[in-house]
Length: 81
Length: 452
Image (cartoon, rainbow over the protein chains, first blue to last red):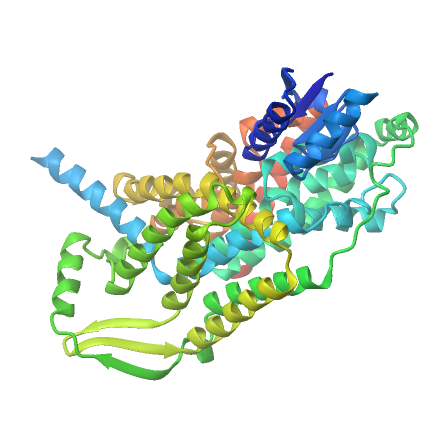
């Protein structure tokens, strides 16, 4: 599974990182989160605002912060496929 | 000895500016403005405005929409660049994208209300109006100049549904925004029925005016540089804000996981600070004079309505999201602002007034250009441009060049030019920078000419 966080490093981006780490820890999954900070790379995704969470090339959310439970569901869905 | 006097003078001038900023009218302006910025970011779905920025939107919709979206969405820099690139590459094209980039930083609620209170409503309104007019102007001009590229871009964009989503803002969020805006306006508007005191109470506490004397000696007022001393009122407000800061650090930092006892304490303290700031408080020889102003009644009623609205119609996670955003704006901006005010205050004592008045004391083309160039090459954190501008004003800068500076500073910095460059390329960035320089200079000239 590939988990990416898109964002230039604002507080919201850091917070999304923390939430995602928490979700991964709770699920007992050991995956490195890839941080994408380059605006050019960020813009290849279909998003209008950061931070965004991308799991296996699919944008799960952008602009707003999801809850840890939501992130867990996304990770589990991606794991089942 | 001369060096020591000089340094003491610098420090007291800095301290005096800081004290003046902690006065009641600034608190009544900045506190609500932060909560509005937080509410706009957390509670307004971006789709409500982005649906007007798609590539199929007609020009007369997309240009005004991108101008307004700056007000609604662009309080945080992490929103500006992605949205700018999105509008440019997948949405309405280069014109509206440039309009958005130009207007966004100039019209955010924090900058406008802060400018209005500290420098004057004339400059604040001019900042909005001229940013809107010239923003749309620059957008249209760029679209015309690069119309070939734009056509190619339209054909290249696949049918992305990025801009087709729409969302509605629920009524309670409208009411919240209106209430917050009313709190801001009631606290800062200088009209008689709000300023007038309807009930006067004297608390017979002796020795209060001695305390005021001590404060005056600590931070001597200097009318020539526009420096006030700390009032007794200000001292209590500083105390309340310090208590709030402590409670907020413990109560707001983990706000996304839920409320704790200190969250309520912090919210209670901030309500109290706003109400207390709207009372007239004067230390007189006979005791402490309390004047219950129109402002006081307005703020109390509005704040009570706000609490009621929150308790009855808002979900817990909405309030958490709102407070989280607000608190992060505060953490990002306030420490830098305090440092900025202090340094800008010291600069008043350090920079000879003759430099500023020679360079920009009159409303000439060169004076305005100097204002713009200073804005481009100096990079100040959000809101710090306001105390800097105030320093210039007290050193004799004309209001025209001052506006030119205030327009250019948030618009163009070396950093933002570099990022824009990666999105739209060298040629377009160069044209944009030149246009902003010309338009900001003209804005200052026009404004300076209008007011004199």
